Length: 391
Picture 1 (cartoon, rainbow, N blue to C red):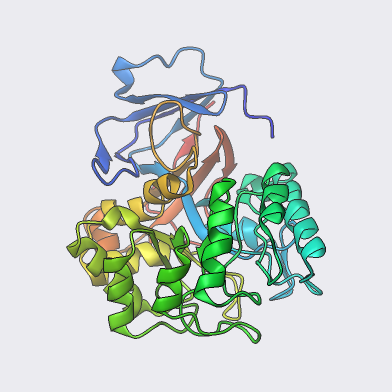
Picture 2 (picture 1 turned 90 degrees about the horizontal axis):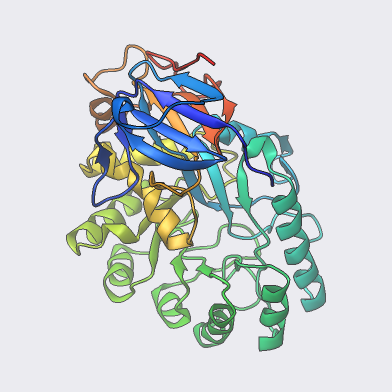
């Protein structure tokens, strides 16, 4: 994809959220991006805003990195046969999501399960989302579900062709920890990141993956530790948090109580940076355009997590865990932003207070690679104040 050649200036920002747990709120009122990359963050009086080709007046609203959905199941384009729905990715953009990570294109009718077929599908999936971004959203796809009979050379072949992800380990015929561990290690050797299904069966054909299998497989991400949908018992969840040092993924389509338990356990361990957020949609429960925002509000309001930190779980944490160039407001990174404000008539004096009381913010604009992709959201509650394009 070609990036923007314009110079974008967003000024009069009321609050800047960085996505970084170590420093979640930045001082400043202006962000500048050139050719799709952040070049400056700070006070307008101190940074170069000359020559702007696009100017946005934030009117005191909040700017944050675009949200990252760490767990989706795309198929082709902006269509999901699982729910017979088109434009679900565009709807998620209106929920502030600018990047999605595939956990496997498992809902494709007739999905091939033979080794030649699954490799071909993974490569094709990687290619078509690399070449086509629905509504500008970045889809990291091509995540094969591993099957019995795969050899090391198969993983090398896929990596050489550009595949960088494995679909959820456990959704295919490979369910034993020892067998999964061998294949996960092959994937890691060739730069392919892995996620393992955690919990009870999600759809017919999947099965239980308990803590022993998760620990033995040693995948990079403990996929939906709060279940997708059915969670493991509490002691197994806390055991995984304590005994494994991999990513802890919480999803909207899981058990909310279990998500809170996992988040609190990670925080008590001083390892909140391991926690990332996804929706696990589209799925049997449908498409969740506001799923990431709802997870942020739920963890903040019920988990007593400061809202500015909750946003980090859906941005900077995921960016670092997934090795992405977005998700953090730093010079040189992709200019992927959301502008948002407290919802109209929502309680709380500020947007952060409102979220900490469980309310969703209103999205007023999304920006991907320095290009404005949407304005007032059609899905969130209306924001109190909206940003304005002035040039």
